[in-house]
Each structure stands twice: as structure tokens, then as C-alpha cells.
Amino acid sequence: MFEGTGITAGEEEAYRLLVRAGEAHVDDLVARLPGSDVLAIVDGLTARGLVRRLPGGGERYAANPPDVAFGPLLLRSQEALDRARSAVAELAEEHLATARRRDAGQLLEIVTGGDAIRQRIRAVQLGTREEMLWFCRAGHVAMPSEDNDEEFDMLARGVAYRVLYERQLLEEPGMIDNVAKGIDAGELARSVPTLPIRMAISDRSVAICPLVPRSDGITEPTAAIVRDSNLLTALIALFESYWSAAAPLQLSGGVAMAGPGEGTGPATTLSGDERYLLSLLVAGVTDKAIATRLGVSMRTVQRRIRDLMALASAETRMQLAWQVARRGWLA
Image (cartoon, rainbow, N blue to C red; front, top):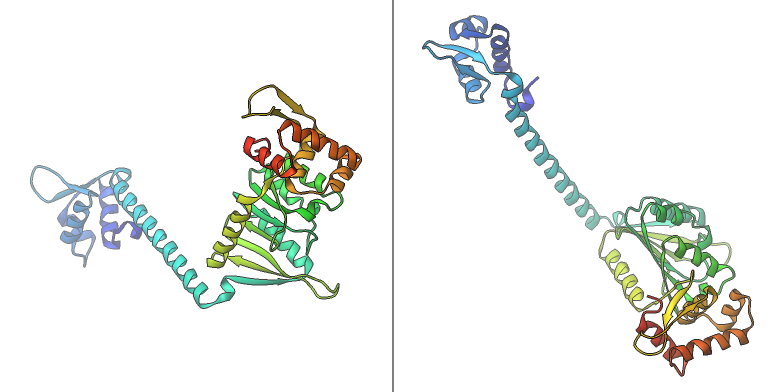
């Protein structure tokens, strides 16, 4: 019963006899344990602190209290077990690394079919603990952005989302409203003119990249599931490089913007529409798309842009975008 503490069967039997008897002479133990090396057993129990030799001479022994005597032994056993677990975990990681080097299937998995890809995207999101990274291009392969209900659930659980939107995607009907909902829920969104691939990365440990789109309406789309590897490291670096160069999207609420100069002077509070306009303008969305979204004419959009240019002392839209970034109006 006590093998985990290093106690042998003979030592356990002798200890139990002493617990029941209270104390005993070594000759009594020899009589009760025929065929055993009682002297060696008693010496071993004494060395472990389980029994003690009674004073007054003679070879009389008594058992120490079990809850006290076994405490250090159990602690050492637990420490040994923890070290064994740690060693097993290291071996398991080494075994997995070896398997990955020898078998590409451990690193890269191919998923075929829109339904299968959609299920994997949802499963990966639901398994995320810290952060999701997204490349969202125009069009879709398996799941439109507006169908990604899992994002709102995960945002509510505290998972961070950083999403890069391709400019053309923002011009699709209803897409700006969808992005605004995500931002309101806590998503960090930015826009770039174009993206090289579609991609989702979970906790920097697994990525999903669609490979072949269903361009002919018949061929099933395919996606690669990329696990921890140099390829995944490259995909993460690709995301970060695009993220650092992207324009921030802020599509909700009003913002107080300082007047011309170095960010000082009277503040002008932008309306929600103007905030939308400025964010979309910096993101590169066309005047027509902005006008459609705001429900105004293109002439009104252009007039409001001129007003923003005057506020920022900018003579061109490029200068306006630079001033917006410089003054942190959309930071």
C-alpha cells in the first residue's frame, strides 16, 4: 500500500505491528515476522523516521505517529511525481517535434469543402484563449464576415480580435455596418488597400488559409490548417507587417478633435456621421461608397471633406490623412 513512499512490504508489516502494539521488543518482532531480516527492517524504519528506539536500554521500539512520520515521505513522493510529469511533458514535446520534422501532415492539414472549412474556422475561434488575427479580403470562400457570430461570443469572453479589412470589402453592401458592430463589441480594426491572402490565426499557434477558391462554381474550395512551425511564424510576421502599415477604423460614436496647430486650441466635436466619414476616408473608401453609407449626396461628402481639410489646415486629401495620423485623431 505504501510502495509510492519507498516503504517495502516487510517494513510496512513491521510498522503496522508496532502501531497496533504501541511498542515491542525486537525479539517479539522476530517472532511475529518469521523469515524476515527484522534488524535491517527496524534500521530502515528508524532511518526514515517511522519508528524510534525507546530509552532505557534494550531493543525496544515504538511507532511514531503516522500523520507526522509519513509527511516528509509523501512530500518527497509528490516532488518526485511532479518531476516525472515534467520529464514526460518534455519528452512528449520532443516526440511531437520529431514527428513534425518527419511527417509534414503533423504541420499542415488540408480541408476541402465550404462546410468543412466553415466548421474548422468556428472550432478554431471557440478554442481561442487570448487573440485572433484576421485578414479579411473582398468576397468570401466559406463564411461571409457577417455570419461570424462566434466573434461576438469570444469578444464577450475577453478574447482580443485584430482584424485587417481589404478596402474593396468595405465597399460591399452592409459591410461597414457589420464592421462597426464588431468595433463596438471590442474588435480592433484597420484597413489596407489590398491583402495578399485570406487568413485567420488563433493564439499564434494555428492558422487557417484558404488555398483554392471555388472559382468555377463547381470545384470545392480548400484551406490549409497550419500548426506551429516556421511557416506559421512567417504568417504571423506577414500579419504584423500589414497591421503596422494599416489605417485604423473607428466607426462609432463622436470624437473631440482639436483645431489647427499642434493639437491645442478650441475643440470641435464631430458628429457620428463625420466620424464615419473621416475613418472611411483615411481607409481609402471611395466618395460614392461613403455617400451611400451616410445616405447623403457625393457633393455633401465632398463638402464635409473640405471642411475637415480646413480644420486640419490641409490642402490635399493626402495631407489630411497625414494630419489625422500625426494628431492621433483616430488613434
